[in-house]
Image: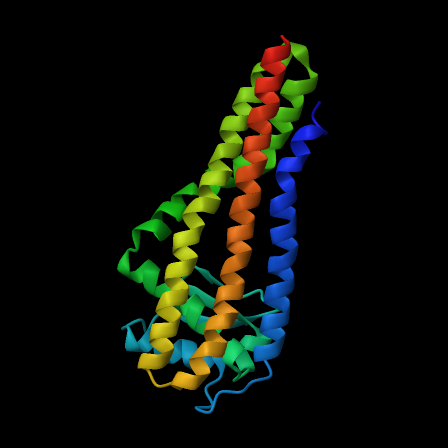
Length: 229
């Protein structure tokens, strides 16, 4: 059966995902109300960090949404949500520094980031078409070979999630070091900023675990089908 016993494998990932989303929402909300004494906004912090690392040509732009912050390597732009861009809270500084960390990774040729970038097309293919191919292979006997193709495709999406983990943790570690070395965070403020980054990192752990367990579920279903044949 496609739905049934093997769905139990997803329960830990579902629980962790719910917890991670609640954790980042509550932690970000808490520390977005704690303002840094140095008074830097997220945009100012990002600019200072980038310039301190010789990156004068990386743009910083506001983007709509909450926690929609990201670095786009295609046009070398750090995009910060409006609250982070304009805010001078510990949460704003942590997020802005994290995204600046990705820009520095890109500029210095950080290998895991380069590897992740090469996997984007394959990961998009695997995450969108992999499950469809698996379902087709399960329910259309004449095309049962699609089951293995779908599992292989979905494996690429899982690999992308796993590669993402060191990229995100490295960016967070860079962020904390940069904020403190550039005098934007006092020692007693660093704890709050670190909590924001740790909560954000947990969402990536949850995504990786969910993808890995989903892959295991597909493999177990495929093995069960082979055993029935």
